[in-house]
Structure formats: C-alpha cells, structure tokens
Length: 108
Ligand SMILES: [Zn+2]
Image 1 (spheres, rainbow, N blue to C red):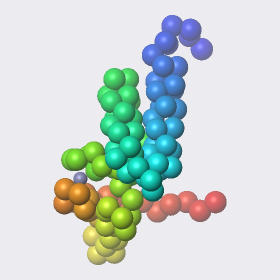
Image 2 (image 1 turned 120 degrees about the horizontal axis):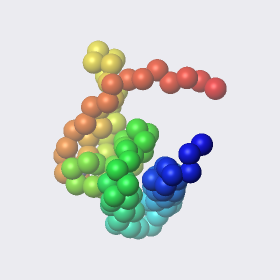
Image 3 (image 1 turned 180 degrees about the horizontal axis):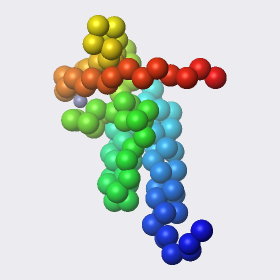
Image 4 (image 1 turned 30 degrees about the horizontal axis):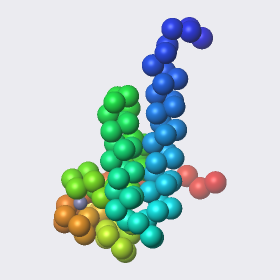
C-alpha cells in the first residue's frame, strides 16, 4: 500500500462522517425535523468538499431539490411501480419527484 494516498483516508473519514450525520438526522427527526435538514446539508457539503458520492441508500433519504431529510409517510411519499420497475419518491415539501430503478436486493 503506497503511503502517499492521503486523500484516500481523508475520504474514508469523510464518508464515516456522512453516515453519522444521516444517523443523527434520523434520530433528531421526531423532535427537531429542521435539525435533520441541517445534518443533511452538512453531509452534502462534506461529500462535495471531499469529492465523494453519498451512498445510494442515503441518497434516497433526502430531497436533492430542497434538501429536506425525507421520512416516508411524514414528508415524502414512496410508491413502487411494478410496470416501470421503479420506486418513486415524492418530496411533500417541494413536490419534487424522483424515480429509482428497482434493484433486486440480496437477502441475507
Ligand atoms: Zn423537496
């Protein structure tokens, strides 16, 4: 392993931080939904600064348009469409709709 890959471990730390921020966003949502949005914002900024991608599972947890942390049945609507083989997520704050193709999840 070359030791010069400094950005590598920095990205790992950034990724860890992003995961934690989403965890905090989830924990805070019930009491302080506005804080959750703040955590999302911080996570997105961290990702941008380190030029890393937010993992797919976490990407579905916030609205790209208005930056809200999304919780199904509370501030977003999740619909699955067998015909289109996609999951549609509607943000109830700004009305933006996003579609994700199905991915057959492996069961453990
Ligand atoms: Zn939105």
